[in-house]
Amino acid sequence: MLVCTRSAGIIQPFMRNIVILISGSGSNMAAIVRAAQQGRWTERLNAQVAAVLSNRAEAEGLAFAKDHGIPTQVLDHKTFASREDFDAALMAEIDRHAPDLVVLAGFMRILTPGFVAHYAGRLLNVHPSLLPAFPGLNTHQRAIDAGCRFAGATVHQVTVDLDHGPILAQAVVPVLPGDTADILAARVLTQEHLIFPHAVAQFLA
Ligand code: GAR
Image (cartoon, rainbow, N blue to C red):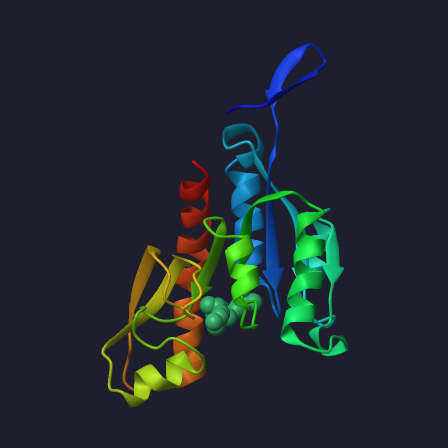
């Protein structure tokens, strides 16, 4: 169903809202914001980044979002008694923006089943490994320790099984002799910046 509003005599479909969750540097969020601007998502996809939320006040990505005129909000998980309480408050904050899509861009929290169910089918994540290999943390060191010749990143839909939802996009990079976890992470991150915005745009299209 297409719902329309009338503005200045022109029929316009309602804008679709993307809410992005971050915990740190927010470089994937920034890549999505830049792609939205350069790819004119507002006109082409009828979609906009409506808000950026963080569970950490120190998250560097918040400044980028503010500089780009995107509303930001911090919800510190440490101030909540339980994971369920935090996720309930986070859902309330996200839902203020009537999201069509919720994007986890380096959001370093394990989500409750209730949260995942609430956004079923409209919740995407980027993970720094070639899933289903290396779900969870320390993916780059684990790939090096396992002797992998290739590593990479995965964009997937989020389900209750941690880092196991349907895969939307992957990028592969070589693991090179002498790589440290940090060097490999930086190589993978450049690819995340390419596949994540692309996967979000494809999802919206
Ligand atoms: C990215 O590498 C992302 O894949 C990873 O955190 C980094 C965030 O970077 N996410 C996870 O590990 C989630 N399990 P960013 O804040 O610069 O986008």
